[in-house]
Image 1 (cartoon, rainbow, N blue to C red):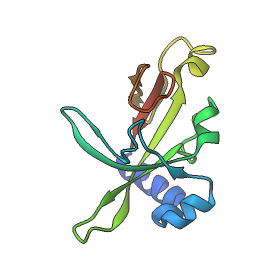
Image 2: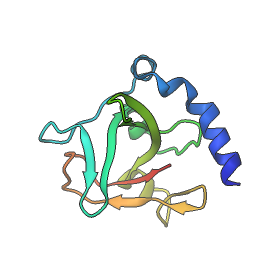
Image 3: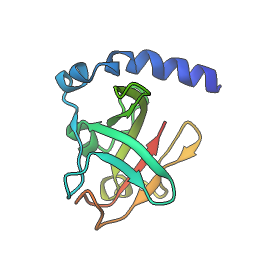
Length: 128
């Protein structure tokens, strides 16, 4: 199952190995309220630099082939490389029609409450 998931995501996200292509597809650099682009979580370490598509974030649908964000990490040569995707849904939009947090690929999304470092309303997210 994991191999099929990786292959499927790889096929869907292959074009986003290029940040320029991500930007052409309306993904933009995400920074926190302090202008910091490299996102980390206390106790977990760095996740990378996120490029998010605000139209997808504001849409409460969760589509496996349309992640709301692309996550890039520095490789050993200092070049940003696609390392993960992130699925995001605004909590209020999701909760309006669901009784439980979203799940995808057998994993429950994490909740980031508001206020938060991004200045966003509370949201659910899942990194893959």
